[in-house]
Image (cartoon, rainbow, N blue to C red):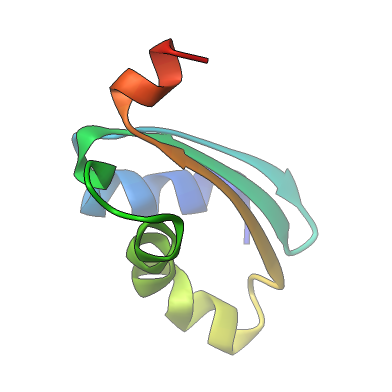
Length: 78
């Protein structure tokens, strides 16, 4: 699975987020910024992404996902 395919999957499910996916060979870094993460702790934020990608993780198309998930406000305060 290519990073562009993952970007398309995530963007389709989270259209209000700015999403960047880097990597290959089954190992990816997902950076997502959007207010969909407002009020969610780190685990809940990750669950939002896993819910979309679980089918691909289960099939072995994706082996590892590292995530940086933040709200727009959090992004601007860094």
